[in-house]
Amino acid sequence: MDIFAVLLAGSIPLIGIILAIIFVASHKRIAVAQEEMANAHSEIAKQLASISTELRHNNK
Image (cartoon, rainbow, N blue to C red):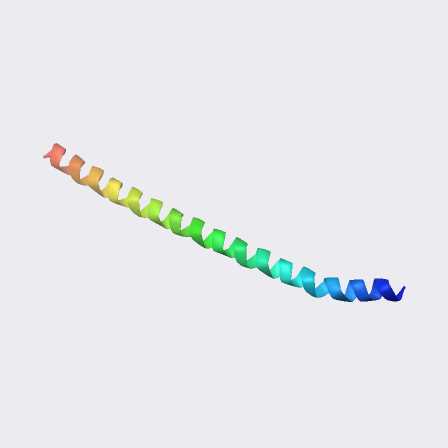
């Protein structure tokens, strides 16, 4: 029973460290995905502005 308590006490900090690593890694992936989405939105906005300008010139 004492060995089990020692193993349990040693594994709890290890689990905490592993969860912290997973948490940080997932936040980094989320940040990268959000940056890619922002870049895509910016590109779409540029393309829409270009199309709008082209349509205005064609209607004159």
